[in-house]
Amino acid sequence: MVLPTGSTLLGCYKKLIEGTQQVEHSARTFNMDKYVGLPWDYPESYHSFMWNKFFKHIDIHPENTHILDGNAVDLQAEDQGYRQEIKAAGRIELFVGGIGPDGHIGFNEPGSSLVSRTHVKTLAMDTILANARFFDGDLAKMPTMALTVGVGTVMHAREVMILITGAHNTFAEPYVDHVCLPQHPCTVFICDEDATLEVKVKTAKYFKGLILFITNYRPMVPGSRLVPEPQSADKPIKLR
Image (cartoon, rainbow, N blue to C red; front, side):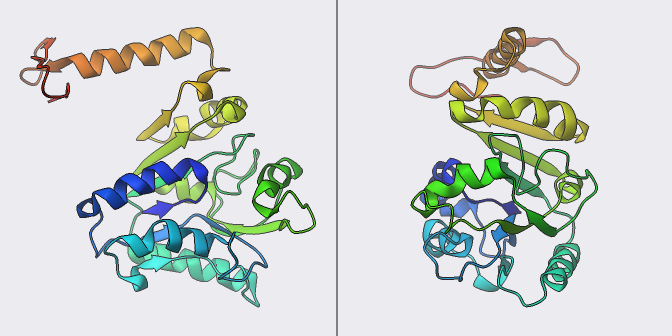
C-alpha cells in the first residue's frame, strides 16, 4: 500500500487501529511523500505522524514500513532507491491518498507529469500557505521542498482510493476529475458533503443516486435484473 499523512486520514487510521485484524503484520507500506530538511523526530515530520498515529498501534513489522528520507545527502539517489524498493515489492495493490486545495496528490502540484515517479518537488505557494498551520503559522519554519511519489506511481497502482473532506477542498475537483484519475481503471472517491459544494448539481445528484441504488438493490444471479435487498431493522443494509 501507499499511504499518506494529513488530518483527512486520521479517521481512516483510527478505524484500522480499532480493527487491527484488517492490517496483516506482513503488509508492506510506502509513504507518499516527505518534507526535505525536517529531522525524523520533529513533531510535524511525516515519520513522526505515521508512527504516532498509526504504525505503533498495529501489528506490522517495522522493516515493512518505508518512508522517504528527506535528510538524505543525495536526494536524487534517495528518489531512485525508493523507486527500486517499490518495484521490488511488486505492483502497488492500493494507493490511498488525500488531495490539496488545488487538487494535488502527494506533492505533485497541478500540471505534474502523468508518468512521473518518485522525485524532488518545489512546493507551490498555495501548498506552503495551506500547511503552515502545522508550523505555528510561521512561513519561515515551513519547508519549501519535498520528496514525493509521482503521478505515474498513482496510475500504476491496482486500485486508488482518494479521501476528500472539507469545504476548503471543493475547488480540487476539476484537476482530479478531469486531468488525472479518470484515466485509472479502478478509482474510488470518498468525500463528505462539504467537499462537493463546487461539484455541479447534476453530477452530485448522479453519484448520490448511485449510492442509494447500490445500498438498496442487488443482483440475484449474474445477468439477472436487480431486486431489492431484504432489509432488517437490526442489521445494516449491504450489497451482496
